[in-house]
Structures are given as C-alpha cells and as structure tokens.
Image (cartoon, rainbow, N blue to C red; front, side, top):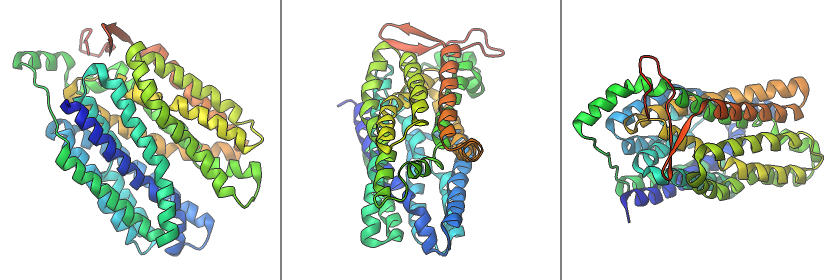
Length: 417
C-alpha cells in the first residue's frame, strides 16, 4: 500500500476516535456544571456559552501560529500535539471542582488543540493532487461519523458511570489516537530542486502572498461562513424543536434525532461527492452544494412538525457533505505545498471566529424576529458564500485534475499556483 493511502486510513481512524472523544462529553456539559454547583438551567447555559466561545476565540488566535510551525517542523508533529492536548485537558476537565475551572481548562484546550485542521493539513500535503478531493471527503466522513457516535457513547457512559467519567473515557479515546499516530503515520515531504524551489519561492512571494491571493481569501471566507452559518442555529434549534412539539416525554429523543441526522447523512455523502468533484470539478460541486444548503434552510423556517424538520435536515446533511471536502481541496490547490500549514492554520482561525460569532447572531436574530428567522439568516449566509465562490474563485482544468489559478497579487505579476 502506498504511504499516502496508509496514512489516510490511519488518520481517518484516529480522527474518528478523536471526534467520538470530543463530541462524547459536549452534550452533557450543562448537567456537569450543575453537579459542580450551578443552581439553574439559565446559569448553566451562560456558563456553556463561555465554555464554547472561549475555546473558539482561543483557537482563532492560536491556529495561525500552529499552522506556521507545521510548515517549519512538520504536520505530523502538530497533529500529535493537538491530539495530546485534547487528551490531557479532557482528563483535567473531569477533575474540575468548579464551573470556572472547567471553562478555563476548555479555553486552554482550545489554544493547544485543533486536531481537525492538523489532520486535514497532513492529508492535503501528502496526497497526490488527483486523489485530493476524494481523500478529504473520506476524512470528512470519518469526522462526521465520530460526531454522530460520540453523543451516544457519552450518553451510555453518563448513565452508567456519571457525567464526570465521560471526560475520562473521552481522554482515553484520544490517547489511543495519539499512540496510533505516533507509531503508524509517517510524513513525507516532497523535495524540489534547489533552483526550482528558489524560483517558486520568489514567484509566490512567500507565505504573505499565499495568504493574500484572491482565491485563498475567498475560500477562507467561505469556510468561515460555513462555520458561522451552522453556529447561528446552535442556540436556537433545540428550542425550535420544543416549540413544535411542546413538553412531550420523548423530547430528548426527538431533538437528538433531528440534530444527529445531518452528521449522519453528511458522512454518507462526503466520500461520494468528494470523488465526483475529482471528476467534474471541485468548484462545480462546491457551488451546487452551497446553493442547495441555502435553499433547504428556507422551508425549515416554515415546518409544523419535527418529522418535516428531520427530513429537511437529512437533505441538508447530504449537501453539507460536499462543502468542506471541496472547499479544502480548492484551498490546497490554491496554496504552495510548503505553505499549506500556515494557510490551513489561518483557515482554522477563521473557522473558530465563525463559531464564536454565530451563536451571538442566532440569539440576537431569534430574540428580535422569532426563531424561524434564524433559518432565513443562515440561508442568506450560504447564498452569499455561493456568490463569492462563483464570482471570485478562478480555476483551470489540466488533464484530469483541477488547479486553482491564483488571482493577481500585489507586487507579483500573474503568479501561478
């Protein structure tokens, strides 16, 4: 088996296990906080907002730093660092004695972690260009499956052992990922001829040019917009479901089903759409998926029964499965391989910024115009993303592969990515 294929298999397994660990404790954080002394649901939600936003802001600040270090010292080392940090701080969160300790530990975890971007960067720099879309689709599938399984594993653990022990189980899962990566993943850096390297570096203008070319900025904005749009609904969706059915005994089951169906259908479609994108073009699939996601959010604002929402969210997941792999593939094509760590770190920082701002926007819109309006805002964000990609990302097809042409960069005459 080729090294890149073996790395892909191992990294997908490691990401699957890691995402089970991260998503295993997240649904139960408010209840854990109540065990730590929070005396009301309202207060628990306030602490949860600090728990999530603090981590996102810390990751937004740290990601470009880790991305630049990845270009200098290797992407494998950064993935080991991120996964080990997730393992350590998940364990320490299980030892927390107050909500403040929990929030501080989560903030520090956000600064040192970031396993998704580290794994994606390692795949993006070690996979042949003609297999990049399908490989990133497979990686996305592993992450979606982990996010789908994690709450179930965490719920079973919480029912059997208590909320605190969920963090210890999650830490153990991440530790197994660290061991797997250390022993089975090998990073290979392609070397150019010295003259070619010098010429290419001069042509690109270094990391600054990589970060300021038009295609890169548009794609980073697209990925940030994706995170922002998803986060807009995070404080609304569960309450929206409750408004449809009231205080029924199986409210948790209904809400859990609606929330998990998107990740499930995305896990199925990500590989298929990634392979299709390799054949007919990443940009075409990205635009089609983003337009579809925008349109499917409109009827979600008009549903009268949770089953209607369930079906629409399932369709949304199918389309969402094609957004991240194609956008990441286009971003990789638009970036010199030796600069992909910095660019993907910058992209993850924008991701985190979107995740931090989205819930604030969702709550504000919902409080002003009603919960249904947040779905229309989300639809508008995805529509804007589609227009950005269609209008500003330039591609050329060479043979069977698709390469992104770099837009004009100041001080660089017609550079080629």
